[in-house]
Figure (tube, rainbow, N blue to C red):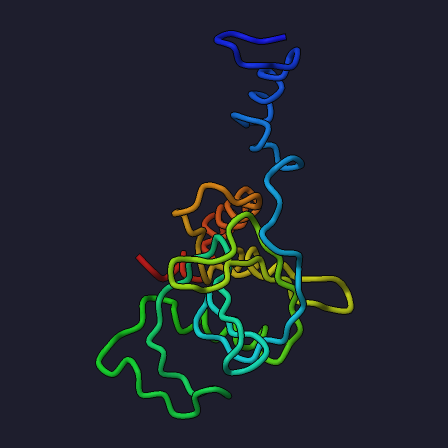
Amino acid sequence: MPGPEGHGTLSGMPVLLALLGCHTLDDVPLLAAEHCKPPEEHTVVRVLDGDTIQLDDCDGIEVRLLGVSAPEVVHDVPDACIPDPRAGVGETDQCFGPEARTWMDELLTGRQVRISYDATCTDRYGRTLAYVHLLGEEGDLFVNEAIIRQGYAEVYEAFDDILLADVLYSAQDAAQAERAGKWAVCE
């Protein structure tokens, strides 16, 4: 039966959507748009900073952690792909940027991860946008959440369509409440 102004509705559907905090059926997480790609497993070969990693080899996939913003760093740390970097001469790191990069490097370099996607697969720089899960014998670690929870990064607020935003904001609220990492030392 058509609703007001010719729009079809299901009995009680607008009330249900409002209770779920959604505007349309596409906003309901279980009914949301299909992810742009199925999950994939890769090896992390290098950490560029607290929210960007490179997978498989030196020419491999560059992944930006979806929903995460870590402090910027000068890309001047030697690694397997660039043993003697010269970029960034005269630039400075943002507060807690080196600590975020070190934490990610120690956690991920050389390890197997599973990347999963949301509705958008790349950013404006051509990097893959993904959730990163460190594979482990005792279960997976959701890296996007963990780096925020540890206080090395914060939620990247220039998004409005990722399904796990609430998880990331909860991690940030906990880190701020505990004054973890950057929340204790950066203004």
